[in-house]
Image (cartoon, rainbow over all chains, first blue to last red; front, side, top):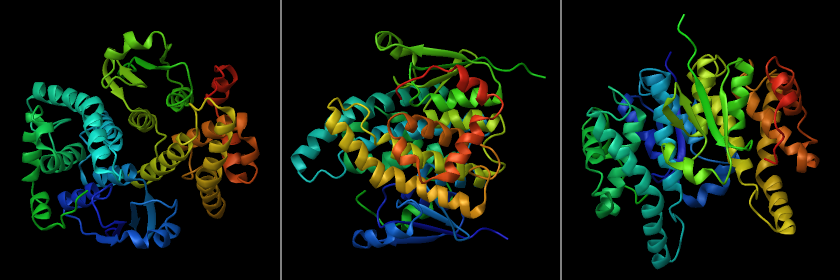
Length: 202
Length: 204
C-alpha cells in the first residue's frame, strides 16, 4: 500500500516549495498543510523539534528540509544514477542553500535590505553560481549532475524563477543555468504545478 | 574486486565539520589522507576547492566533493552505515542536521569570555537541550540500541557532539541517559575505539 504524505509548512515558498515541486515532478499526491504566521507558536509545539517543514509519512514526522527532499528524491528516482551523483546533487544544493541563507530575509528597513542583498549576491551567491555555470556549460548535457533530472535541477529552477522575478539583472551571466531552468519548467508534472500553484513573494 | 579509491580529506586542524567524516573512515576501517590545513596555508589552498571552502573530499585525486553532509552521507552509504532504505537514511539525516543546527549556534568565535558564557548558556537551554531531550525520550520509548535501531553514522554524530560537549558543557549532559549510552556504545566499537585513543584533541 502506498504511503500517505502531509507536508506542514508556512503559507509561503521558503524551505517548503521545493518539496511541493518534487511531489509534483514525481506525480505523487500529498496533503499541502499551510499555516499562517499567527498560528506558528501553536504549530511549533506540535512539531518534533519545533521546526518546519515537517513531512508526515503515514503519520510519522520527518523534519529537516534536506532529509525530506532527499527522501522524496531517493524514493521517486530524482537522486541521481549512483551514490557519487547523489553526493554531487547534495553538494550543489547545500552550497546554494548556504549562500542564499545569507540574504537578509527578515530585514525590516528596505534600504538596508537592498544594500545587504546586493552585497550577498556579489560576495557569495554569484561567485558560487558562476562556478556552477562554468561547470555546467562545459558538460554540454541537459541536467546538472548527470543524464537525468534530479532534485538539484529542480532547486536550480526554483531559485532562478525567483531571481528572474526579483532581480533579473543579477543572473545575466548565468545563461546555461537559466536554460536549464527553462527546460525543467517544461517537465511533465512540474509544468502543471507551476501553472496552478499559489504564487508567494518568497 | 576493484581496488578501494584513494581518499583525501582536506580540512582545518579541527574537529568542526570534518571529524564525523574522519570517524566514518575509522569505523569503516578505510584509509585516508588526513590533510589538515593551517590558517596560514589556507589562502594558498583555497583555489583548489570547488567553492573555496572546507571540508573537501578528494576521491582518486579528482572529483572534489565539498559540503560535510554530502561526504558523510556518501561514505556512510558506501560502507553500510546509512540505514537500509531511504526512510532510515532520512531519519539519520534528520538527527544529524538537527544536531548540526543547534550546536552550530554556539558562540565559537566570541572572544569576550563573559559574553561567550551567556550566549552558550542560552543556546544550550533554548535550543540544544530541548533537541537532545527529545531524541533521548524517543530512543528510550522505542528501546533503541542506536539512533535508528542498528548502528549508523548518526551515532557517530551523537558521540562526537557529546564528547565535544564534555569539555566545557558537561553540566548539561546529566539528563540524557539514552544518548549517553549510545555515546559510550559507539566509542567502544571496533575502529572507533582505536581512533579515539590516538586522535588529536581539538578545542572544537
